[in-house]
Amino acid sequence: MSKAGKMSKVTTSVIRSMKEKGEKITMLTAYDYSTAAVMDEAGVDMILIGDSLGMVVLGYDSTLPVTMEDMLHHTKAVSRAVERAMVIGDMPFMSYQASVEEAMRNAGRFMKEAGAHGVKLEGGREVAEITRRITSAGIPVMGHLGLTPQSVHQFGGYKVQGKGDTAAKRILEDAKILEEAGAFSIVLEVVPATLAAEISKSLKIPTIGIGGGVDCDGQVLVVNDMLGMFKEFTPKFVKKYANLNANMKEAIEQYLDEVKKGAFPGKEHSF
Image (cartoon, rainbow, N blue to C red; front, side):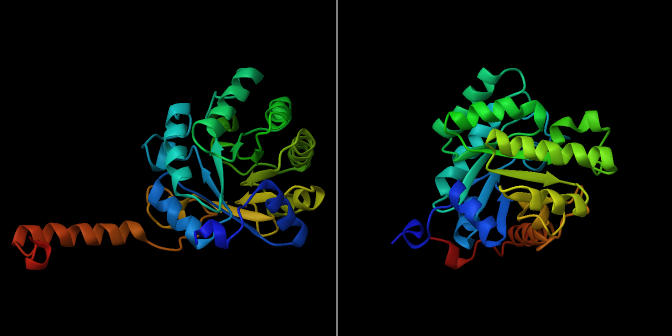
C-alpha cells in the first residue's frame, strides 16, 4: 500500500479543519525530488516551492530574478515526489502584478504543467482582485503579508513589518480582505507576535508564521536554513535543527583524502 493509501491527502479543507480543531499546521520549502520525498514521508502538511530558491539554490542575492520557468522546473520535481502533502507553488516577481489575465495564466501553469495544488502570492488589498479571480478558477491561493521579499526594496531592507498602530491596522485589514477574496491561508512573515496572534484569532482561515510567533496556526521555514545548509545568513526566526553544511564539508573532505591516498575505492566497491 502506498503512503497515500495509509495517510489522507492534505487539501484546503484539511488545512481549514486543522485550524478549527486547534491542530498546528506544518510547512517547509523544498526545491528538489529527494528532499520533498523525505518531507512527505516525515508527514509535513504543506510543501512550498518558494521563490527563496533564488538565493538558496540559484545563488542570487534576492528573489527578484527568479522566473516562471525556474519555478515550474523545481515545482515539477517536488510534485513527482509527493503523495500526501499539499504542494504550493510560489508565484515569482512580475508573474502576477502586470494584469489579472497574466496572473491567472501563470497560476494555471503551476497547476497544469507543474502538478501544484495551489499557489502563493505576496501582497494585501492590491492583489485582492487577482486572488478572487484565481480562486474563482478553482486554484487555491495562499496569501503572504508582512515582510514580502519581492517588495524588499520598497521596505528599505529586511525589517519587521506592522510595528505601530497604523501599520498593524493595515496588515490586519489586508488579512481580512484576502480572506474575503477567497485565500485559504495566509503567511505572516516577520511581524510582531502580538499582531500575528490578533490576526490569527480574527480570521477563519489559517495563518502560517515565519517570524510571526507561536500563536499562528502553523509555521514555515526555508529547509536550507533549518537544516543548516545555507550558512551565508541566518535570520533571527530560524532554529537550526541540524548542521548539514559542516557535515557535508566533513564528508567531502574525507572522500577527497581517501581518493588521494588510494583508500577509495576499496575491493568492496570494485567489480
